[in-house]
Length: 161
Image 1: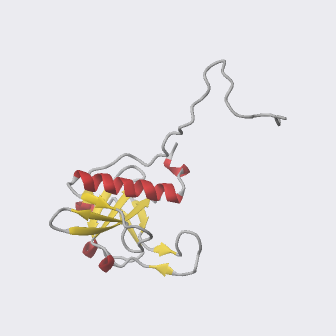
Image 2 (image 1 turned 45 degrees about the vertical axis):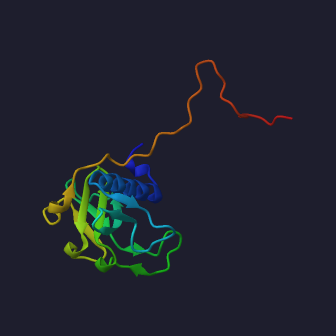
Image 3 (image 1 turned 120 degrees about the vertical axis):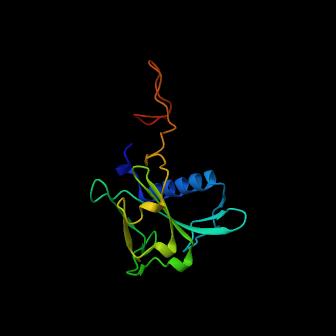
């Protein structure tokens, strides 16, 4: 299915998986904080140093060559509290961004010059673009279609007494 059919949770999970895959290919052992961590999605252990990584993902493409990425948090997962938590570069070491077409960036947080959103794809953060991953897509269903001449299992039309 197309990326536009992903829920925000699915999109975020794909962004985190993309970050884990890329970091592992760079030689890191990757850890996920237990419980809700408001500032860090992943910890990458490169041996000599632990890096705190915040992960963001985006499907919003205002122009064919640009991606708009929200880096602030608006009220949490379930409820809008009216509060905006702006991105604070002192809380993590890197921002990893994955966008719907598979492009990815690994940006040191001191290089960020914003608190709420960034635009990627142009020259400003181009030096931090890393090798692309697969485009966002919903995983295939595990349900199989019935074989020709076979009736699918389970009750379908009427109550069974």
